[in-house]
Image 1: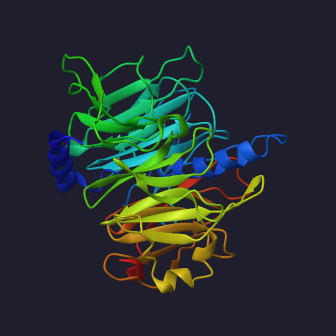
Image 2: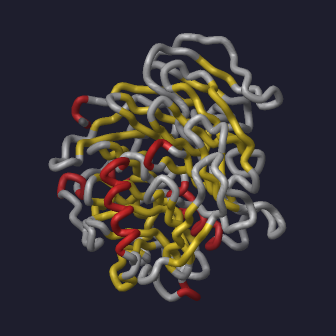
Length: 404
């Protein structure tokens, strides 16, 4: 890749390493996509996803009425902190956190009619919201300067797709539909982001929100992810030791694995017992929730593993020996802490310290399966979906001391 991009990466990640994380719900798409393709004679498995839309502080309950856009219900106290509930059929599907704002993509779990909302993290009140073009499969990321990147994908061949760069309060944006949408964005500067493509990494540049100018894009030299006709861009990306690691599948959507951009011979996964699901970056390591494929079926869980910049496994023995982490569904990372949603009985959500040492696995008292998570400071925000509920809710919890 170019020296110019290399410098932008160094600057961007020194300024905003916490901002660049794959949207947590997208890792689950890999597992569900594999299952759908392997069950061609059965009904498709719907991908139920949600995202955290809450911040620390006193408690209140905020309810959206999407027929009256942006109007919330009255405040109400909760046991753990803030909670935001949504009407039946609506949920928060992705989140991002930056400064005073918390962002959420909200809509049906798997469909159109999506809204991007910004909340005041101090009060939980809605600041602003915008309708998202295209279908629900959108990528959301926060770049340097707190600018918001959003990519949306057409629901049909004739529908809109493209990428926006929005101001922190979402009131101004640049960019437009007509270009290619993406399922993952990796911001590298205030006005540039990388998008994985079957031919490599596409560098997209947009004018600052509200400024005149045209969007540009170019294929970064030396950023191949594999054979173009047998490589499908994936749903997560990370920067390890200055290298960009991308999740991809083959041209038919099978064999989910990680690859180092520009070094397609350096890979992890793709084998029956090591399909790559969601990923989380902690320092110069990436944690991977793997899953297995047996014939025409994919499992719902697998072993949690840690990889270095060469994609070599470096998983601590305590993690490999954990019966809880052997049933991991999704993984998230935040400031030296690994979070895992599991199918182990009584351990829907666990965490452990992973920055320099591996701490004990600690269970959080969440209700129902966890579908999304974000953490900031000493608070973790969790979206869970109780089995008797039609939509997810978000609850904040204090970060367990053992996980810091």
